[in-house]
Length: 490
Image 1 (tube, rainbow, N blue to C red):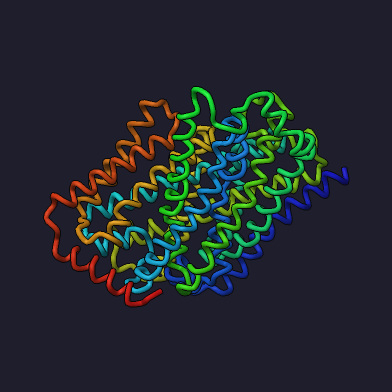
Image 2 (image 1 turned 45 degrees about the vertical axis):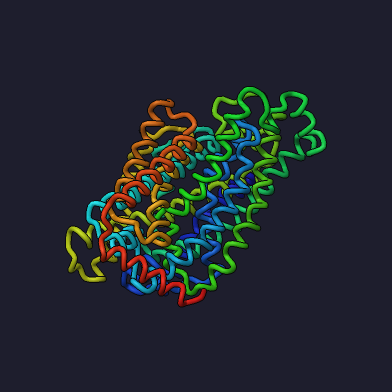
């Protein structure tokens, strides 16, 4: 009885802290879109790192990673490469996005495309891609949250009740403080994420007999658990490479990361954050240990996504089990809050202000953004019953859709022959190729399908740019912006 009371108290504290931080954020808030969406472009280095890290470390990177280690062996170790490429993107593109956004007052990805390419149909395509891909990735967090709640409560709390609890907390603090509330809660969530991932992996490795026993036993059972040999070896290498590119590029192209780049206080943020992100990859040891230990501790589970909770429920004491559950929820909330906030920003700026009422007052736009937070939460709640149940596969689909934006973004930064028609055809061909690949493969190997889409995207972008007559305005703007950026000598 006392144990249950203490566990309940721990969970209540976890739920209360974000609400308290949301109230602090509300007290500092300024009632305009620049503050609600970008925190007034005053996001300092450590808070920016914390919110990027917490957004990056989603349920996909915790529960999904352990399940993938359990099912696919070492393929997920490319995650160390993901972290490195994700960090490099902040150096190559993030600083440029920040500079362009600050100088030209961008708030969303579509603002960037609209200013440089000046194409209404491209604006619509980018907005649709941003909203749909982010909604799909949001569902990854929801699927994970419902799974955790069902397993942790043995089905006592249903998916419907769990969804209400999940979204109620998230909507309250997002409504109160916008990006500032997201950043403050992400610092809290980030600490929990690191502790939960590392401690759960080390604990299960200890239970399984330690690394000296686990890995030799896996090699004896099947070398494919720790390497990529045999008939499927070549395919697994291709899968490894495709994940290396799609996951970090897709995450970086999500509107939530665009917003964080825009919100940076200065260029100095981009000198430090990439190094911190690379160092953070050390926590992947936790998911590696947990996934490989699970192969020793159990032969079969009906749902690999539940393997961590199943084993901890069996071997861990109630308090540690509760702590890991809280850590899992930290990964869910820290990503979901960013996605809901990003969708609200995209709708408010790219849909309402751009197409419905260009003269909407600032205070009204903030109210619209807040109501959009609530509406997105309600729509996502409805989707609970119709989304697929594989956390990893669903996440790759969302990231594969988002990744297609990288080609015209790079073109706008580095190639003055880039045109709106090339950007539009590139993105469209990439998304269609990705979709056709998913259908033909039955949803399998979605990362390889996404790479095929990216190749098609690049091919059509280059062909169209070379054959299309450049628009002088776009040509000059790309060249002028590049020159202005170089003169800053960042």
